[in-house]
Length: 263
Image: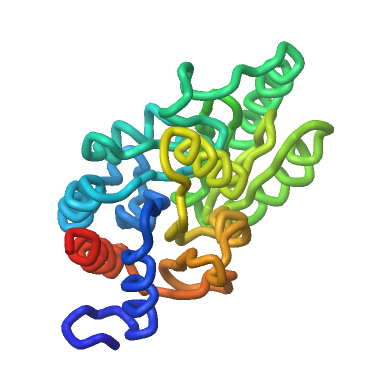
């Protein structure tokens, strides 16, 4: 550990090298990264220390939140400082887009309606299971359900509506998200990097921190050899180069990075 930081010394060294580059992007998942996981997703809020660090960091650095939440929901819960870019819906929506994201075709609209209908039917009568509707996907939430109920309905969702032609399925922590369009934070992160680079000097490197299995495709599109920094928050297998234990550690990381960039 680095003395007084709570971060592994090797990660601190990677942050120092990252901070010394020119234009860089710091991209972060929200739930489980800036905000502790809570039973009621609408009650999630970033830790005060993390919010304060973001407000400092955005004055020197491109900062984005990349989440599975719908854009409006992400904005309401994250309450980000001015200047932070929001990417929602697993990369399908961006606050940099004129309309917040691409529109569904009529066929995709019909598919989304069917997904909502079938997931609603699976949730009906199962305590602790509910369905969230997003602009381009539907999400089955099982965090508040009994473990046997959660396992059963998850498998039913993946084998049923999740297997329909044209559906893009993502399985996360206590959620199954079924999209009428391609979903993926990796594609969203690549697109964001291109959008930012088109508006000025190219983005030289990216730091991405995530806690969920849905963050793995974002880790996969980044490379430490190119100066990128990938950070897994919490336990579980991951392709990330570095790991921290909790959102509290992420706040420390962001404070350290803000210090380095301000220098």
